[in-house]
Image 1 (cartoon, rainbow, N blue to C red):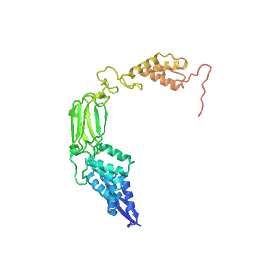
Image 2: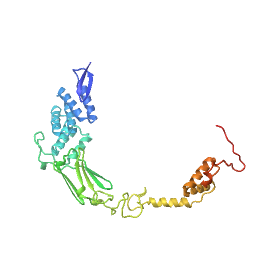
Image 3: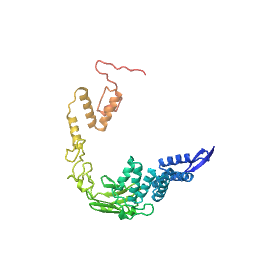
Image 4: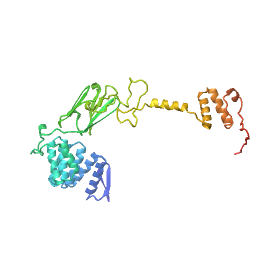
Length: 358
């Protein structure tokens, strides 16, 4: 058995005449591990070894999409469709490549063809949903890219979250170049437009922001708008239409309010419910403890704690030294007396001291 090198730092021992099964396995392993560059290299070897195998072209097309190379992915998908016109996955991969290129109408045409072959596929339904409900035109998607006017505007989901100082708006658009986007903000609005997909989002915001400190960035998986708040208040919604009257946060500090902060209790589901003032509650509990009248040993221990807590440094030293040296039988507050000699054990009345050898 010989050792065959496959690239990406991977080798295996096997017969040189039949490397394809192991190559495909290693390529799939690299793909699952998100090592798409290695997966592409290995799938290229698989395609070269078995160019008549449609599955190999489908897998390499998927890898090219992960590498943000949709034009090459489309060519591989076309090859797979030519080899296996009855393969639903080949048509779906073609549709995905067309979608990434902004050719939404042609992509929908490919997804519908794939669904004819695999009507139970939930993934195809999701892709069709992304393409919208527009009518399919009889265009030659293999030869030309339609004008922007021929495609329906793409819609992307968006989400938001906030901190004390800013609001972050995320638009779930993949592989979008920041140069293809128009980002505009005013003190109470934000607008994002994507030219290639005719996407547009315009929002009138819940609160005011500082346009000069707002930023926009594009990542492979999303677009991100970082909106700096004009004041540290919690927004109960992203847009002005979600206001419920209150604009002051329940869990952010209010510099204009005297005293400590009040925080929402587990029973405070909204701003209209009673808010627990934890500082006030703590002071009330402390007062109750001070006014409590313990009995027996508890009363004695409380007395000692009170004396020790209010004593000066010499008194505390006297109490500690006398208590430790006498085995807990003497507790003195006179340091001038206790500091001059060792405190002897004083057994309680009716009892005598006994020493044990260990």
